Amino acid sequence: MIFFPPAKKIKLRPQNKGTAKAPPKIAYSSPIQTKIGFEFEVGNWLTMKPEKVEGKEEPVWTPLKKNETVLRAPNFVLKADEHDVGSDLEICTVPFEENKEGYQQLKQTMRKIICILESFEPFSQRTEPFTKLEAFGRLDLPDTHLFLHGSPKIKPQATFGLELDQVPELMEDIGKDKKSVHPALKKRRSEGRKVLSRQKTSCRYDETLLLAEDGMEAFSEKLIAKNMRDFKPSEELMGLVNLILLYLIRGSGQLKSYAKTIGSLLARTDFARLFQLLPENEKSLFTKENGLYWMELMKACLDLIELKIDLPVFEKGIYWRSAGKDHHILKDLSRKQWLTGIPLGTDYLTEEHFPNREYAEELESLGSWHEKTEPSALSADGQMPIFELRTIRSIDDFRRIEPIALHLFRYIYSLNRKMGYKFGEEFSID
Image (cartoon, rainbow, N blue to C red; front, side):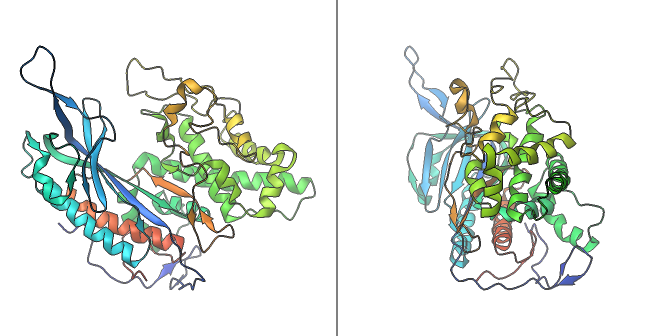
């Protein structure tokens, strides 16, 4: 099935004023060595293994534990993921180098994954042994079976390095447009919005972008009143502020699931490290007097939407989809404590630093890679943070995962090089 229209070269890049020009070609002194990897959660397919139970002749089918690996193949693995009634199948690729060779490896890998999924057609309700996949790689758990409950419903996620100053660009591309946006640009963004953003999340991106701009303006006015007239926010600062506000806006409502759903664009690099990627003049300003100016900036933003800084980051709790759970187990971290720690070197919204150690593991992958970044030839720091895009829409036709993965690879490649292409647009990768 062909998901996207026939490939074509994009010649024009509409600008904010409605004009258009060709995307620039940029020469780099050294290669950008970022990587991009994918996860595909296969819903309706459960991984089970037989276990002997005392007093019973027949073995009992038992769900695999989260992250138990079933099959290891070149460039990807099949493993178990958590599920309410068992363990979903999850397919995880290796991170592919963000270059021409990595793109070709991804293409070959996606074709093999498609072949594996095709091997279980037709998708009637039945049980299939994983031994039928021996030709694809090494079976770690040969006794494991797959319980098919219909056609696979696939939820993709992608993890990649992204320049901090490109965070607002990504949000603009997959969020809602301002009324002033040129119609041609709106049309070019439409394909990405169909795939990379869910409707409610796109509203959050839109709200976040406007709030960051207005909050920065209010903060700048305060600095002018203090005769600090030379402050101009960098694109990196706008990226960081947008991310923080995205978390705080989502955290102010009832999260249906676990804590990490606070980050639709989830930072795997922690926020204390993200702060260190700001230009030196901003780091100097925002660390003065124990982060006084940083907190003034944050408060200027939060006051605009009447979010009280002393209330919890997870103000209305988590796990609202699950009856009988304590929704407020993460109430011990206030917005003020989280925001205060960021410029001073501690991200409290991580398992390592969460104030209540009893529930710290609930934060899972939020900032779990701590200071880890990817090498960058663009930023002054020489590093770019790592993010996980969690808003890609579920896919009913599993064959669509190949073009979606390839288009996303190209889109992130373009973002990091400021080439101006949008999701779904074709161009050559050098």
